[in-house]
Amino acid sequence: MMQGTLVNAAAILVGGMIGAVSKKALKDSTSHTILQGIGLVVFLIGAQMAFEATNILVILITVVLGALIGETIRIHDHMHTLGRQLEKRFSGHSIATGFVTASILFCVGSMSILGPIQSGVEGIHTILYLKAVIDFVVALVLASTLGIGVVLSAVSVLLFQGSITLLAGLFEPLITPMMMSDINAVGGLLILTIAINMFVPDKIRTANFLPSVFLVIVYHLIR
Image (cartoon, rainbow, N blue to C red; front, side, top):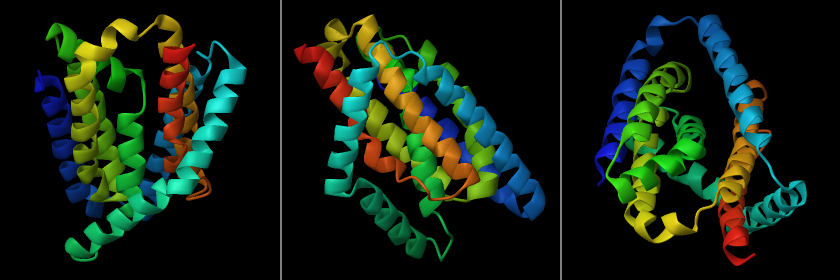
């Protein structure tokens, strides 16, 4: 059942390690340009997903309420604290930014939700295998610019997607096309904030918006 998620996490781990090792071979100007190029593609992906919204008012309310919840429980701060603790453990490598950015990028999106559902309900891992290939490439390039923190995001993927896989049997009958469209829309907005932060670092506390995705699910379950 967990095979697809395990392969996905392993792909991020391997890709991230290769990228982190090759970092020294890249000039600062080259790394900066590569990061901006990734930012442009991430922006495109986020925009495409965001336009799937079926009800702008629902998206607005869930994003605002999600931000309030995120700020109240300080998700962004806790993730950065975890990153700094891991930074000390790994001999001073700066990993907080890479860990947070990669965790959100790899965990938010239709594939990270539909893939685990497919694995948990049907025992088919096609979506997650495809995601693993994509994440391998992204992790390699991201780690070459953001460092070892990208590697540790494999744990986030394992926990997030693994949890969905285990619960997929319960939730799958309740998921509607409209729900998935709004989930993609909110996820797309979060990915857009990642792209913005790639050009202007730390301007948006992206992690604090994560509850928005779950609020969308709750809305569609009770409507």
